[in-house]
Length: 349
Image 1 (cartoon, rainbow, N blue to C red):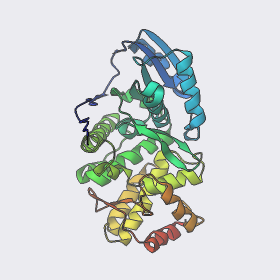
Image 2 (tube, helix red, strand yellow):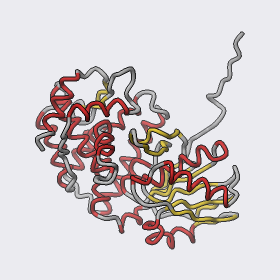
Image 3 (cartoon, rainbow, N blue to C red):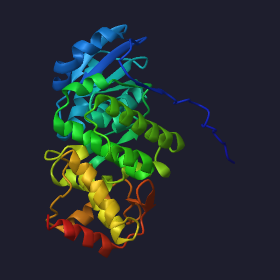
Image 4 (cartoon, rainbow, N blue to C red):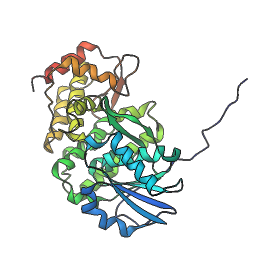
């Protein structure tokens, strides 16, 4: 006997991404703004007049990737219970990728799931982390290994917030823009080569194109069962770098920049990417002072960390490698010796 449950039409998880000045946002029930002290001090005065809700609360969490953990999540959940947040309430992620990931994960598990919206305040979160519904926390084994897919109800991308962004944070966001261009859009990459993203008009165009590219991929593959894995170009290496340095040395975008260069070296080794294309990508990253070389002290240990990645299955490591500029290959067929050869090269940084 078999009973079939057709769930495909049970829920429409579509949502809009608003790019431009933050409009008035009306929440029907209670709302909780989740932020960190830095963003609250800089921008809460701008946000609050635009929000209306039955009741409005603010919860602040520590700033930094090293705080994206179980302890911070527990603190946030406790505050939700303190405020008697119910299933008709909405969480508002107001910050960068760390705040967005933790707020979304809390929303996914609080009373089995409540609504949340994203108001990203860093370039990296605007072009990548806030779009797509990936939520989660880190643990000692790796990055984002505990989490859920939980789509926001809306995303509001306001370039106003970038005016106070430190140079390193800005560059970290540029790394994700470059990632999107290398993997999906050669013309976009060539445009980036001749464009100065410190120009606010040009930056707005880059944000828009990056969001369009990611939204198209998420629409095809919401839960990373196939093509969405291409968004992890550079991340397989980057997550090991972040874990080895306790999430305290490099910003996520900086680790991704180094991870892309490593992936490029592997792509060159297996004949997917030319040396000149790899140099073009590295030059573009270095134009924004992004690090492109991570000194690997123990290649075997680095290699073993790959198996804690969510994309590794059955003792095989999945890599996203550029296939020229503007295309990609997702593969788990790279020989161990080719991988170790690349890792040894970076031991000489």
